[in-house]
Image (cartoon, rainbow, N blue to C red; front, side, top):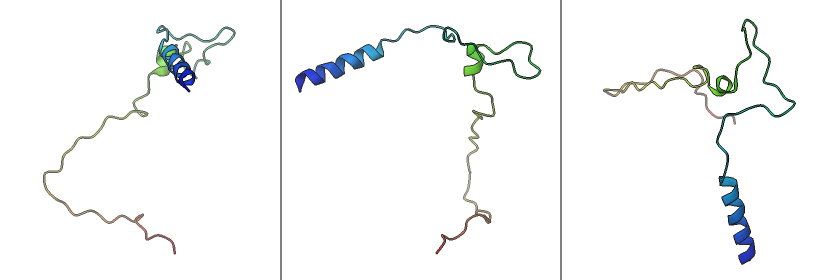
Length: 80
C-alpha cells in the first residue's frame, strides 16, 4: 500500500515538471491551412487566442431597484 502511494506521488511530481515553451506542430504535421481570404496560415498563438464572439465581455449593469419580469413565452409548465 505504501509503495503504491509513493509511486502515485512520484508520477504526479513528474507530471508537474513540464517544459514551457512555444507550441510547434509535431514532426510530419503542419498547422491548418490558411482560411479563405487570408494571406498566410495562422500561427500557434493566433490559433489559441479566442475570437471576441467566443469570449464576450460581461455586462455588469446593476439593477438599482426591483422590476417586474417580462412575460417569457418559453416558460412552460413541465409535461405531464
